[in-house]
Image 1 (cartoon, rainbow, N blue to C red):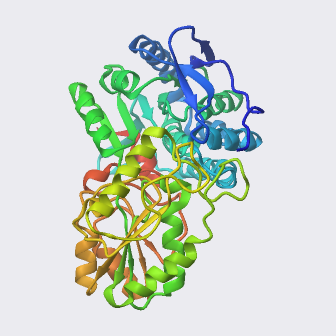
Image 2: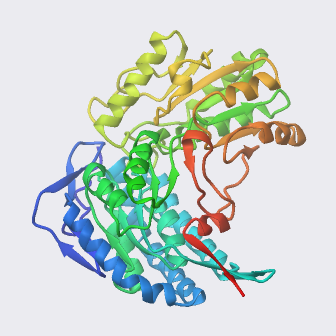
Image 3: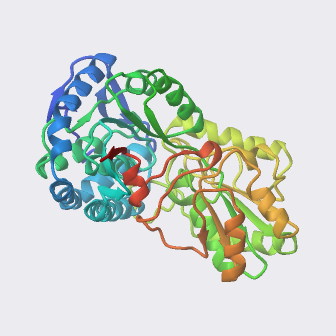
Length: 477
């Protein structure tokens, strides 16, 4: 197992009013899920820490809100090169703290966040901040102090997705990183400060969801909460926020259906589908975790999946050749293992994987990447979000049956269709989900992303993602 001894991280600190605030109270240990070793600590924040961060954000808000949108965009653009320069450091931290294979972490850390920043800055520069409707002037203004609560599966990209549009809109922000993968938040704060972001406009408070997250959601000085995480936690955030009737944007769980049509390029559809299901160790809310296939092609699809799965090497996330690392924590390993055991108990056909650890990996938060076939669409493994490398293959009889299965869960975040273009588009339009990828359609940061049903509300990315952080005022004259 490759050592992470060469990695070093700053002293545990919050980031409040433009500087690191050292902390000598209780700390949260950050564990490497591949080894169980403690690689860093961060403060176990309190409601009092939240109060200090909110006070700093409140004080900084008027001047930042009054800054011209073009000037705000210029500051934000300068964050991107600062993150690029730290790309290797960010990738190493992501791999060490939540188990992402280093080759994948490097692509995500160095490519996606800077591109997203550049794209969103362009959206803000072209945004219609005011317009005339008859005798009314419609003005769009920042909402105030925003709490951004982010998960552990994409530590930097999730920060960028929330914090960047909030700042471009003229808000100040209090960020709570996940206690599982908190290390890149300090790097982001330092890059933002170097870019010229005024003190207090961005603040970071570490801690647990039960303490810091709840304090932010309920805080009367917070005007909006933007949260990404599980549906269960999203409901708790909404309940806490309702006491002050603040705006809440939620990006929650998913159980995305990948409908492979009879006219699809079968090998391409299966290969891309498995990649989505297992990328980042299966820890992606929009992963295609249900592969819906024509009943007559089911066995052929299963054989193609066996072949494609041979490419996925499980092992040390610091190894360049690893395709699948450990899950983010031992608790996550136990949770995913329980779902795999449930799939076996409920009678799904185990194609590969199954309960237990991969061969040669007796320790660490590893699970065996698993494929089930002939899955009952109403079974637990077909209905609940597993958040690990587990794929369910579900046969269907015709288009109507495929759409009915795709829409049968409480979720509606993402989905996919593979097949002839017009046929695939017709199916995509019938899916009750916030995004659908046709034949591997490329990620577009100008397009909105968000869920139907219990996958959340509100949108991220593009113009709608910016509007999420704005109030609308009508002035009659």
